[in-house]
Image (cartoon, rainbow, N blue to C red):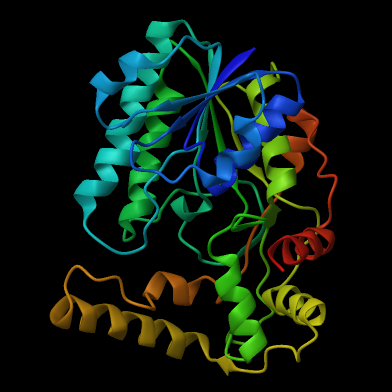
Length: 325
């Protein structure tokens, strides 16, 4: 198959390109005109890889794309702060444009990479992602993802599939991971509450395997999947393991959940007044990430896609730290 991967130059997209090439597919890697393509160094050397530069929010630029049989739409504007309009332009209008182009080019399967942020983090463990309400209405990014999911699953001209990575996707090339390493090394990474809230991690090698299955399996169209690692780790377990890999003491700072959320809201408010347009270092959304359980049942992916993550989150952390050393 020839597969289009939007956001190919990103963290997840670049790993997905390599995975699909290893599986014997041709890949058209779609990068934004302004995007840094350093992550595509490995994929670019493969004879079955083609790089394309387009702005998905400008439908006219997509006319230059070659034909393809299926698409994985991983391009997105990711932000928990900022105005609504840029999010709509990329995440909603861009998705609509790419769907229309996929239909016009004759593609059949369209896999959309969404986010578990479509759910309000009320606290849930082993939750069914198909029955958990998409009720996050205060975060503009989440609202844009909900609208884009509706476009994909409501499109009758394509086989639409939605994949939501676990709450913490991580791995080599993750731009945020070095910041986490530095915070753990310096002993300034705080836990929220007791650090025992649990989550789905999504080591990128496992994640792209699940995305590849969603692209190919007959059972996938019209369905939603959370793809992540085995287990129900807590934030404390994750950062304790990471500290052990780095040879430093585990995180000891702890902030009560109510205080963390209050500080996040206060910082947001201060930046709106004193520094409009600048991203604050802490937001209420980030403060809430570690406050409550955000863990989903992966059995639908196992049953319908045959998804079995080959790498544990512990080994994933080991490999990520080695890659970034």
